[in-house]
Amino acid sequence: MANQVEPKLIKPLYEKLQQEQFCTLATVDHETGGPNVGAISWVLAKDEETIYFAVDNRSRIVQNISNNHKVIINVIANESTYSISGEATVKEEKLDGVPLKLALLKLEIKEVRDVMFYGSKIITEPQYDKTYDKDAAARLDKQVMDAMKKA
Image (cartoon, rainbow, N blue to C red; front, side, top):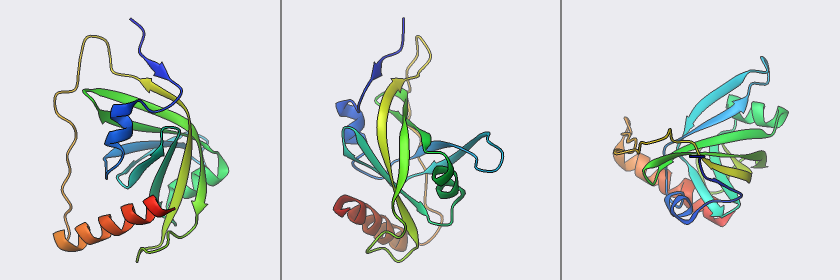
């Protein structure tokens, strides 16, 4: 049985990406030309065809995307694993309303592919814990997500 392929986000993914979410982001390394994978969490589905994400503006991710716009965001949700591919650009070099120097990146979705292997499902989604001041982390997360929603 072939995995599902869609041209935009399905409703459960769109809803999942309305809040901070653990994802991995694959880019093309600007030095080696090989794959580069990073973990991100400030991700927001602006609409069914667009995803915003924020990273430190000095990040290798920003350098890689500036050199090659092709990216894939991997999301574990809805009892499955999804590969969301498209082209990303730097929308803002410094996200307004946030104390850190974060770049806002915009992914224009070309394809959403369910890549879970046949005959299986995810029974527990990844979870993580902030290892610094919990109140400061919550304030920063809210500032970043609010700024992305306004962008």
